Every structure is written in C-alpha cells, then in structure tokens.
Length: 211
Ligand code: CDP
Image 1 (cartoon, rainbow, N blue to C red):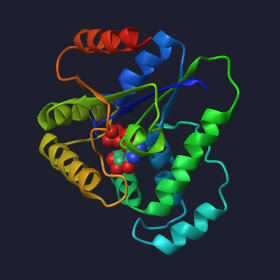
Image 2 (image 1 turned 90 degrees about the vertical axis):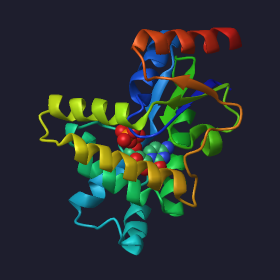
Image 3 (image 1 turned 90 degrees about the horizontal axis):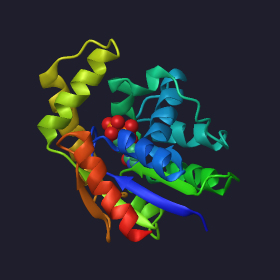
Image 4 (image 1 turned 180 degrees about the horizontal axis):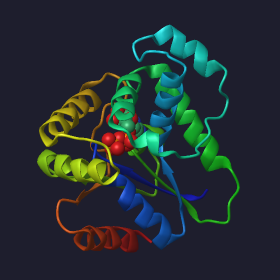
C-alpha cells in the first residue's frame, strides 16, 4: 500500500500550496479533490445545468466514467467555487468524486504515494491515511489571501464580497449533512496564518517524526 497523506481545511486555507510542497519534498503525487468538484461544476455549468437541478446532474454524471483532471484557469473562478460548494452537498456527487479519487490512487506510478487535499479526505475518503493534517487559518486572513489571488489572476473583486463568500462557503461546508468539514480523528492541526516557512517547519516536524 502506498503512503497517503491527507490535507483538509476550509476554503482559502492554503491546502493547495501546502500539498504541492509536500508532494515535491516527499516524492508523492498530489490530488486536489476540490479541483475535481470544480471540474464537475465547470462541465455542468457549460452544459447549462443549474446547481439545484439534482436529477439532471445525476443523469449527466452517469455518462462520465472518468473526470479528466486537465486544469484550466476558469476552474479557479469564484463562480465555479460557489457552484462546486452547492453540488458538494449531494451524496451522489460526493460518492462519484470519491470514486474518482480512488481510481487515481490505483493507477501505477513510480512515486511513493499520494498527498490529497480537500474537506473530508482524512475523515471519510481515506480514513486510514498514514498522516492526516488539518489546516487552520482565521477567516479574515483567508479572505485577504483569496482576494489578492483573484486580483493577481485578473478577476475583478471586492474584498468585502470575498469575505462574505468565504463565510458562506465555510457555513455550507461545515453544516452539510454529507461529509461536513471536520477536524479528522487523529489529525494534526497546522497553523498556516503566518509566513510559509513557519508552516513548512510544522509539517516537516510531523512528517519526519512519523517516518
Ligand atoms: O479553493 P477552495 O479551498 O475555496 O475550494 P476547493 O478546495 O477548490 O473546493 C471547491 C469546493 O468543493 C469547496 O468549497 C467545497 O464545498 C467542495 N469540496 C468538498 O466538499 N470536498 C472536498 N473534498 C473538496 C472540495
């Protein structure tokens, strides 16, 4: 069995940057589960299906065996993130995305394992992971970072709106019935509110102690 490290946390907590760092440093493949939700949201939206049209979504995904993980910059748009957060509430969507993740971890590779980030990876999808991390950052810091990221990507944004969006996303992610965002059992909490070198030293300590 290959090594699995899970990285969970709320919107804009820096899971992606952290996971990329872990993947590169410890020779692992990075799977961004949020990107899979975003990809599905993007494809549905392109097909003019609304996030509330559950039955249409159900019928649609029956015909997509494997979701392509090719990235495009539209996936990072705020609108797609909000759409993804709505469909992520549906149990059949979560089962579908979880299956996609398991399919990826079954593919052969020369790497030593996987680092997977999301909301429910350590609590539901890979409960037996080698190491579980939970990334914690105050909501205002997350909103500031997200705002800067969107501006840098050329998307017009208003800070107050981004803060509201993130709060709403937190509420949706934490209060849904299916796989809500929680601190997984056995997870180590990483504080990512300071400089990245500080985050790295916390992570190094956890991973190298476990190895
Ligand atoms: O970039 P951000 O952290 O805002 O979100 P993301 O990780 O790209 O995920 C987009 C949305 O998908 C999130 O707001 C969650 O609602 C949902 N998601 C989820 O429910 N479970 C996951 N494992 C990953 C994402």
